[in-house]
Length: 82
Image 1 (tube, rainbow, N blue to C red):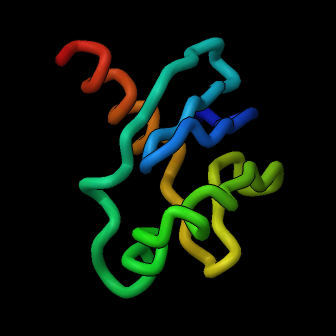
Image 2 (image 1 turned 45 degrees about the vertical axis):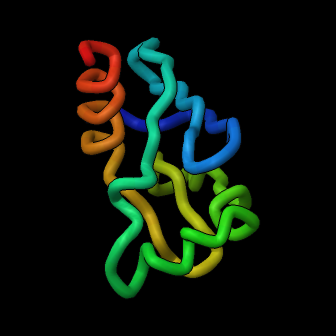
């Protein structure tokens, strides 16, 4: 199982992620910001408040939103290929 160990907000809806398996890179989460829990993150100030929850091993926001670390790693790898 992979975990996010560090996150840096880069602007817009992009995050620089570091995973415990050594993978690093940028993920653009704008296409994922829909639905009740994620729509509030369209506010860039809210999105920028992202942090790593060490217990969950992934990124979280104050409103309770989070993404599975496996999903984030998959998105990172897809974006690296594109």
